[in-house]
Length: 115
Length: 116
Image (cartoon, rainbow over all chains, first blue to last red):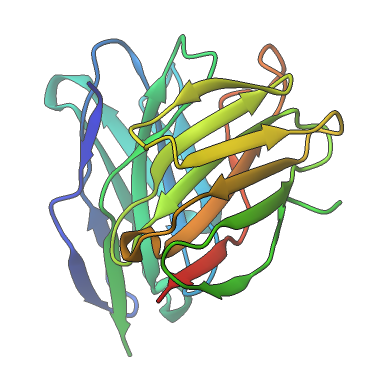
């Protein structure tokens, strides 16, 4: 069965500081990996995705993530956090041959940004 | 171009009642998935509809049912509501299976259901 673990429930960083959100996954085959962001009262917005190829993927809003197969990880990073980045972040895994593209989400990490 | 639209945005029901939530997919998308997001948790997959049929189902009881219409819009029905059904219900759509981006879901803003 596939699963996603986001070890950090809450993270607080100062504006302008760097950010890394951790994500570990379990999947029996080559995974599709995603990071979504959710602002209060909103749906999920896709930040970036990894399907294959270069293990460092770039996303929107200056975010990037690195796929490390040996560590079953897909950590999200940003070099300089802005106050508007405060939100909940979800990592998700899906199947490469999954015609139904069902995603399994982690429990989320809530990011707070200090001025 | 409208994205995924859901209605209603908020609703309150009492235990034992039934509820219907509606979703219109993004233009060009033909597959609709439903997720339940309880407070403080990540979304959980309920089921997915494609070609008006349920294609995949998560670990949810039969009280949860759905439908997809010829125009690709979808409904989620929940019968015999329990307090634990209180959650944000998210609809997501995706392009045809062999199209570019078929594995990328576009989410709506959700319908927040409160069961009293």
